[in-house]
Amino acid sequence: MRERGAEFEDQAAAWAAGRGWRIVRRNYLCKCGEIDIIALDEECLVFIEVRARTNPRFASAAASVDRRKQQKLLRAAATFLRAEPIWGRRACRFDVLAFETRQSKTVTEPLWIRSAFTT
Image (tube, rainbow, N blue to C red; front, side):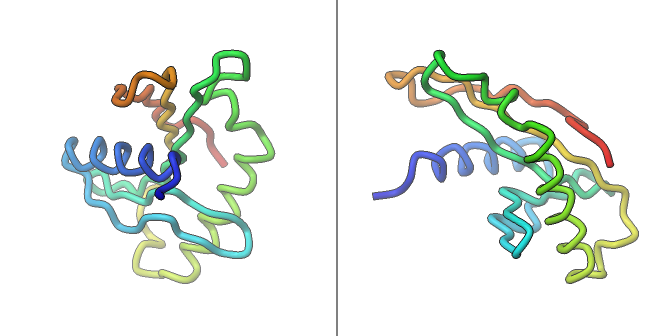
């Protein structure tokens, strides 16, 4: 059985591809952490964090990308850029795709936070 998070990542990848972005890598994993999706938006390399919440009692999906998580993403992105020097000279940004959904609802449009944080 697939994890629910993977379903949201699939939806996020389809959302990005639907905007004409090229998916460069999914689930990039290194010792610093994981980047859910790395995509190319024209000439800009976009590191996408996918978050989902089904229970409204907890913090929103977008709010869960706190400073600690941002630092992990920054370190993972730096590791990716060192490992893949072909991408090193491109502009980069960090976007969040947040899915706020109830358990009974399966498809939802994500909240897109472009340039959610900077270095």
